[in-house]
Length: 496
Image 1: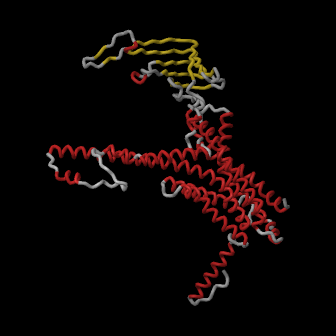
Image 2 (image 1 turned 60 degrees about the vertical axis):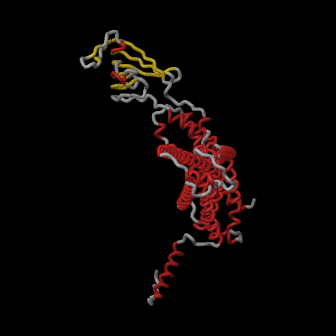
Image 3 (image 1 turned 45 degrees about the horizontal axis):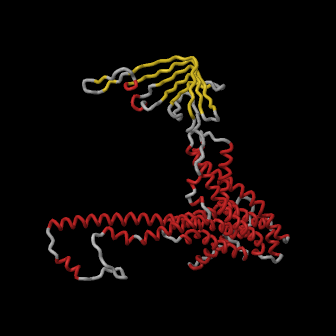
């Protein structure tokens, strides 16, 4: 390896490592902030958070690689240009394309790595990460009781605490116990206590509520009472209650917490999603859907014959064979009652046929959308990998043209082109899903456009273009202005 290649690679790997870490962290925080409401008041352990961060960090790597490649290559050549090292290299007779060659090889290797990572690791990380996220979202909040506010998340209970002490003791506890009759006759079991405390046992499987110096009130209504029921003169029932009151000095309640905490769902339920599949699975699923769609199209005509009340012979060109039997239908004498019956049957058959056509149209279009969805994800396995190479073709010549290093101008330019990549990708996907473009065209639209942009920047960098220098545009504006003034017979302005 030549010293020039070592210099280029050394100037690249430092920014690449830093920018890759920063970009993964930013994408990870974006995902975490989006789902922050699902984490609040959940009984999550450090292991749960560590697993979630690990899985989603892996998920963000294929998305972060193109941006890191763009930013680091732009910074590398920007730093070389800013400190005139790139000028010295050119003065030695080494072309800009030769200077880019070591990073071009690195970009190819990163693209290959991105493809295999996206094909093998990303489906596994998506399956693990989103299944864990689903379990966290469906888990109930932990017991977070606030002073003076009724807490209703414990199934079967509503409780209020007047004051919470530092030692875990609670003062002034009110507990309403609900049952199946609560919706009909209201709360019939109420417990009041001067003080108490709550704690869990059996690995947070059960909640123990210990109460001190209190009273339990229980009202038994109608069917649950030994007293007879009465009705008014209008026949309306009169509620008759049997009121019970029990005082206690120490009372302990044990309730299950089975509905709280994170419980793992069978991951097989999430494997249908296209993000959970590799190239082989996506291709197999898309081919299966395509075969089902073709079978549905072939069965349309045979199945539609069931909605007609007559049989006819057909030629190869699908036209009805002409014959005298058609004329005989026109000349036949039909009673009015039979005409009404024929029209009713015809209307019913037409309605049934219309329903058959609409349902099959919806079904077949749904099959096409599903097939396009899987084939689109199949192409994205390749497009995300190639986008690393495309971003290098934009970043390296741009750095040589701009001649600015650091995190200032490179970050701004990188964000602009990454947004363009994202917008073109989303727009291409939308056109495919709307059946406007073919799947390959929509999937590769973003890379194709930006690849042409990259070739243009390479051409400008080879010719030492001053594409982003202000005085170049000022000079062109002055020439146009002088030409305009000369055309109208005025003297050109000497000072701009």
